[in-house]
Amino acid sequence: MSLKCGIVGLPNVGKSTLFNALTNSNKAQAANFPFCTIDPNVGIVAVPDDRLYRLAKISKSKKVINTTISFVDIAGLVKGASKGEGLGNKFLSHIREVDAIIHMIRCFDSSDIQNVNSTVDPVRDLEIIETEMALADIESIQKRLEKNNKKNVDESTIKILENALDCISKDKDISALKNQFDKKLLNQSGLLSLKPKIFVCNVDEKSVQKGNKYSKTFTSKFGQENTLIISADIENQINELDISEKKNYMEMIGLESTGLNKLIQKAYNILGLETYFTSGSEETRAWTIQVNSTAPEAAGEIHSDFEKGFIRAETVSYNDFIINEGWVNSKTNGKMRLEGKDYIVKDGDVLNFRFNT
Image 1 (cartoon, rainbow, N blue to C red):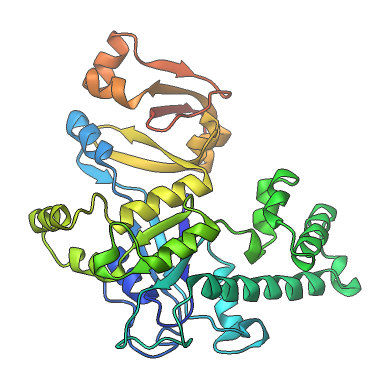
Image 2: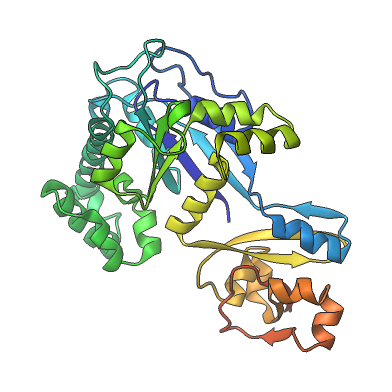
């Protein structure tokens, strides 16, 4: 499963700096003027998972393959984008292509970094972005529900669009639609307002542990569940260090986890994702699936033929695989199970699929 997260926000809030830190690259131009990012930058990052290397060591695997996550650095949005201001519709079209939105919020003072507004106000900044996305959704929905276009839209999607338009127009909680309609149909609707969101309060270096007055104002209104406190500058500094220096520096500043790890964990949580493994002498590999996926659905992540011809899955939990040092002892000690089509795969399962092509 290919996971893609788009980093959005007003100009000069630190999107490109964070992107460069997350992807350990200098792809994104980071400069002190609005719209320095025009075309979106895309970086594919290996999802860190220590379990992979423990499995690979036991299986004596020739290769280790992480699952990946893509980050997209999208051009800064301004008030009026839904009507074409700034980079307008180009910005909004790029957001439609991602699975989750990372809202980058300016929570720092700086006379050196230009602010498109006269004051630092994270609540106002987020509301500007969400308003523009809502207005863009209204325009999109109205066009799709016009008489000439409606005949090309199936009945279930029409109901979603009509309910979404009612929620947005009347300022009702649009997330309630997730309890009324099929998840796949909601995703296919392409509505920006329905995309899962992570809020990143970009703070100055001294506030990275406890936040500051701006991040506290933000979390008091929007809560802490989907909010992270990150310093994009510090993340960039960390990436310039080697492994031992990185560990020492993080300990020195009291940082337990990198911004990359925090974002990945949060993205997996809000999107309902988990990981299973395949492990053998050729390779040990991680695979991303939806929580509550059946064994055939998990097999389909490897190849559609695996799902179509699924017979059963040889299954060992991660802990049992480690304790028993591989497939052979796991089977001998009764820790390997043969699971059928109804088996719900669990995070950390080590699987070997039997199938007919």
